[in-house]
Length: 261
Image 1: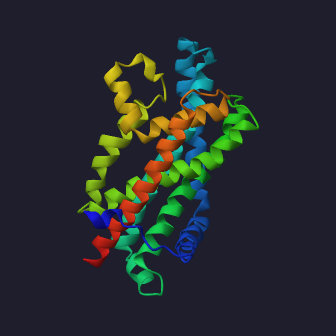
Image 2 (image 1 turned 45 degrees about the horizontal axis):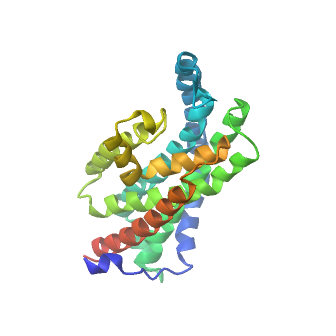
């Protein structure tokens, strides 16, 4: 178990893996551009304006404004997580891209680090595409909401590391459905996204704060977009930074063990 905590030797050449994925993305940008754009419209229209018309305001904030930062956080989570689970697994197992890259001077650590950076970049791209939609609906506050872009990168890197841990241990691509449905979906619903955590029983609040990464990302996004300074700002930032480092280190070491064996 000790090797899982060993600091990986990652070089600047990891950027070449990131660039490879970026070049592929640019060739299919039309397919990748519209999903986050349409997703923002659907969430705001169906939940924000539709359900929001019955709810009114939460904590003195119109409901559509309340869920806007959660939409950004969910998009960052989904983009990074699915890129580094299904996307990375396809590149590793079916396309054999990892084997081909490792045959060059790049190391396994460089390859996985590049994948993690790309997962974080996908989160940034999704949030950046969504921001103009939220501005058009007048549900976020400028210029503070621009802080969601660096937050998307940090949060995306955290979820990319978490995703790569599952990719490293999954026996087949179908098995990735388990973390998708048993972890990502509950987080999307019970992380203070569509309603305050305070209305849940104390035990569920504890679980959300202690074990759900999305809870802290949603809180930070909400502080940036409303803006609404929160008492647990330092806790949220610290939790995300620590989790990001832990997930990334473990995921690189797990992938190294899988690819070497």
